[in-house]
Image 1: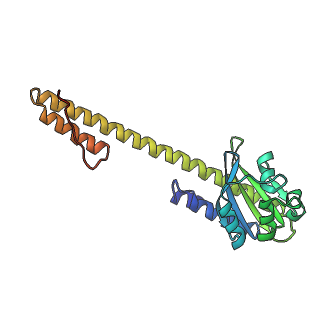
Image 2: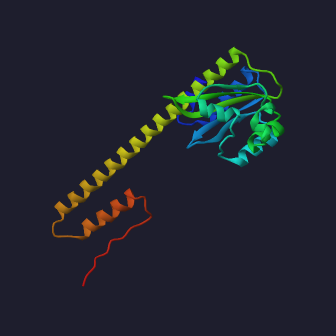
Length: 223
């Protein structure tokens, strides 16, 4: 995982995809998914080995609020690991909530294990794995998935810091370019005190370059 994080600086998708593949394989699950928690809703951003119909239903649903009693909802509510031995025996399925119905009937899900991704006790996402038979995960597998959740949080934080650094570098570069352009214009003004044309030409040139325009023009209002 660390090699993927270092080889894909600022890119979360390859990190999440690799993480999900490892989590499903090492925890002996059938398939799994990773969700980001955004404004009270969940958005699936990575998955591994989802049944086609179930995966398509989740992608079409987009961001959603999970039903009470389901694994995802309980992780959001408690910010703790949630282990459900049989999703088909939950109230969420009994009440026919669409998300849970998709999980049980399209995904064939029975046992599920969801682990929160936390940053300073703030929920940023959930990693969840599934089995299509009633077979709870053991303590070692729960610990493994918790470790993968920690790695996902590290990847998110690294990407955030790198993107902030890139933005800061871009802002500094733009500020320097603007200061240089201003200095160039002032230099032309001081060397062409009685001539407006070279000053205007420099202003138009610098404006076009800094604003990344195709062209620019300057006009005077007379009368």
